[in-house]
Image (tube, rainbow, N blue to C red; front, side, top):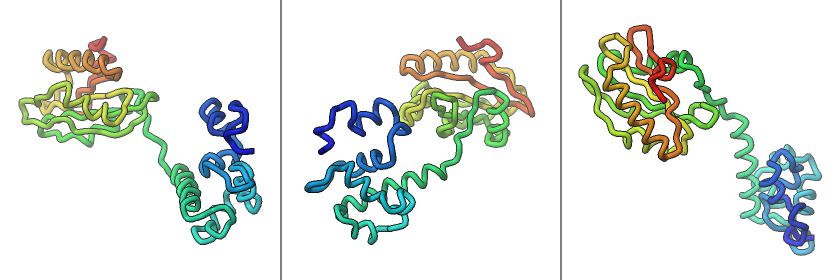
Length: 221
């Protein structure tokens, strides 16, 4: 039976979106990759036949030439299957994202990444679990400080699809206590971030072997 003729509740694609990929068998996931079957054979039947000799590992060992020799797979479908298998392999090699949910972790991560001689502002882009997506050096100034606007900080966060931003900057004087200008600017950034649905998680000011967390100090709403 073609996939389109199955009851919607039983179609692999709809089940994946409703229940998640873990709920599907290997052949159902492969059928989604294939998209359609061949004459007289549904995508599910084709997927089961492709997996009947060694499962996913056997399929991966075939390579491009071996896949193209399997009935029902032309160059385009063989490429789709190879791409899906390679994505699965690469996802298993991806390092676990660094989680930054405590100020001490942020300090340990950043203290060697800021130039002690000039003031720099870094924005750490976080996902919804406060895991690191990336970092952006937003501004760099002289001993007198840096100038920035909310757009300088929030534009990279929007582009990265970040759920949260964690700011950190250093004081070349060595004193980590935030100035009134630091606090005022941070609160403006927090208000702008909220309008975009982005959480300003914290702002760390780093000095000589010490730091101040504005969140822990109650300086952020």
